[in-house]
Amino acid sequence: MKRGTVACVLLAAVLLLGSGTGLRAQKLTEEQMTAYRVRPAVVLIYSGLAVAFTLADGKEQTLPVYGSGSGFFINPDGYLVTNGHVVDSFVKYTEDKDGYARKVLDDAITEKVASDYKAANGREPGPRELQQARDEFIRQNKPEVTGHEGINYVLLSNSETMRFEVKKFSPSIPDGGKDIAILKVERDNCPVVMLGDSSALVLQQPVFTVGFPGVVNPDRFPLLAKENTLKSSITRGAISALKTDYKGMAVIQHDSATSPGNSGGPTVTTDGRVIGVHSYAAIGADGFKFCVPINAAKEFIRDAGVDYNKTADFTVVYNKLLQSVWDERWFDAQTQVSTALAYMKNEPDLEQLQRRILQHISEMGFFEKLWRQNKAVVVVAVILLIAILVVLYMSFKPVSAAQGKPAASVPSAPVPPGSAGSAAPAGAMPAPAPPAVPSDKTSIEPSDGTLFEGDIRGSVTVIVKGQEQGTYPITTMPMVLGRDAASSTVVIQNDLVSKNHLKVYPKDDQFYIVDLGSTNGTYVNGERITEQLVKPEDSVQLGKKGEVKLVFKK
Image (tube, rainbow, N blue to C red; front, side, top):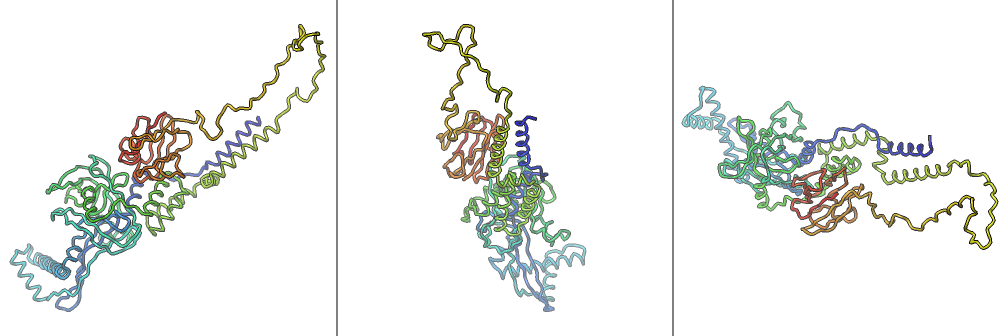
């Protein structure tokens, strides 16, 4: 085997070892990514009151009147959205605590005597019969309210429990309201969900509904374990219709599976953006579920003085974590998940992601771990190895048979007098041509890193607010577009552009682009993307407003 072949084989072996050979766990699906984006921000809400009372026997009893629903954070300072009917009892209680407590007890008495009358007589009591039964019960038992307390707390996904305050309230749709409420808890760096645009929905568009249906509550469905109260459910469906209610207010019909307890939870698109607040469902008819459009909720939120576009440290870290997991950058993800858990300790989805990340890292071979953690060191080591192999090859280059032997002595032909000395005698062999003098110039200029034509696979022109910023070559090396001059290949100074917004590199006759977890997103032909192959004729823009556009050319 030739020494050059040996060197190539050794180099190939080094590169092969650097790539790793470990088995890989399955890549996350789009549905799983949607769940991860949304679920940490979804909370379980308990709302109502407990009334303490005595009867004639003097023993104190407690009458709890409360319900549960779902909600979701829209601001990292502790602001969340739910349905008005989820907190209706608590709101009425706070408006008139003593009066509402007596009303709750009166309603319970009415319900009891009506039930007892039906059991004894086999029919429902009439109005006069019901009143007589009530009067008799009160005369015999002398019910009296002795105390009352509001029930108002939310349970976060990491098991934190805290009281809420109702900042703004609109009653249920049957009661003439918008069925929206804004709640506030005392917590910083809350996980939030992004709000979408309900006006852009189309029929049969896939959606997901996230929340706490009654079956996940072990108090109502005791066959499930207690920890189910921490895990929201996510069900897939599609937009069935875009309708209006009896007051002319827009509502969204969808067919995601829901049950009591889902009220107030978000209905989201596949990219995790909220397009509606789940409100009610038709009784006895599957597939008739209705949401309050998020655009209507946005007006309500703005009226409450809440900024739903505000981000926080947790949100930034969490979005980067999800992007690293999606891109399978496991060592970056390992650092990011630890930071996220410092903000949301014991959060189930974060802990699950951490286990997944550690699994992927454990499946890597030694050389792959070395490559992923120390790419610069590995590259330098490979270059040095190549240099050593080349030196060794040149050192052991075999000597030809003609070399090392003295040349035969050939007598010189006499030079005729008066000649210039350059002409050979007749019949003599022509003198060999003198060796070429090496040029002091190279054919490749300049040597300052300018790209060779063979490395250029295309170009991208950046247009900002209708003005060309410049045209930049696309090579086999990834190009990063962003606002940060220190880490971006192409710097774009525009508020819609993130520090590291987009990565670009060629693939065959197209260009592969990857959104780097940007705030305002990357859009191809009007659709927000995470990663995608694009053609020169495709419309690409950074942010939805269209201020920053990219034109690709081969």
